[in-house]
Amino acid sequence: MENRPSSEEKIMAVIAHLSALAFGMGMGIPAVFWAEQRKKSRYVAFQALQAYGYQSLGYTLWMLAYLAIVVVMLIFLLVAAAFSGSTPNPDAPDALLMVWMFTFLAAAFGLIGVYLLVPVIGAIACALGKDFKYPLLGSRLAKYLGYDFANPEQKIDAIHEEQFAAAMGHFTVIIFFWGLFAPLALWLTGSKESLFLRIQSAQTVIYQAVGSLIYLAVSVLATVMFIPLYAGVLLADSGLAGDGITTFTMILFLIGMCLFGLITLFAPLYHILGQWAGLRSLQGHDYRYPLIGRLAEKWFAAAKPSSTQ
Image 1 (cartoon, rainbow, N blue to C red):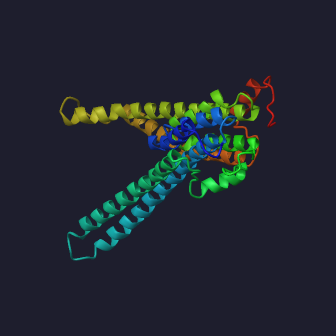
Image 2: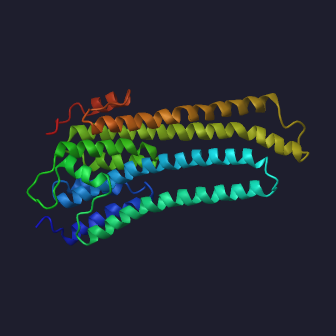
């Protein structure tokens, strides 16, 4: 019976969950498993899809929580440093710094531990043939898809499946470079019968690939702009050159600072646009990225519309 998964189904479900241990680099695995098994095994398809969603959404939430911890701890450190000036104990600032570092590391590693523990539990449950559901995500996803482990005859909503898979591909924008491999896997394996999934996955890959290349190019160029100034200062300190700071090296340094400023300004916008695309896809909208979306649509204009369109 389908609600008693075979050994092969258990193995694929276990691997899908354990791919979370690769910290984003393994998200293509559950994406491929879902695409290949959605017509063959409801059990594997659901476990892989929620594993894909857990890693995409979970990594995003983990990063936001990590940033929140950093902000809170920095505020705590500033407040503690301000009050430490009035204390007669000269060792107080060092003690406060040690407390801050210990609390920060405990919170950061605690979040990582919790994030990784859940999929390990899921892998163990699937190895035993259980119908594992991630906290908060699993039950909602099952209801969204119409999935019932105890009812093998119940069909999964294919349209919602594709919308969820496409949205998770957009959400992987939070993971630099490695995030594009999950929508790439969907593009290559899961979009054969769905024009919607094909266009969403293709434009997601292009958007993230272009964004990653621009980020790398600008970062490298900005770093190169700093080298003449640093080299001049080092040579001047060692007596091998006269003035280490010249008009030319300062101009290059300012150009490098401007480039890093551009990265700092546009990086959040890049991530926000990817997250917005994921939200719109999850809501059932056929989202198009500026320029890239229209280009992908033209590429697949001659493709046969899927049953979901």
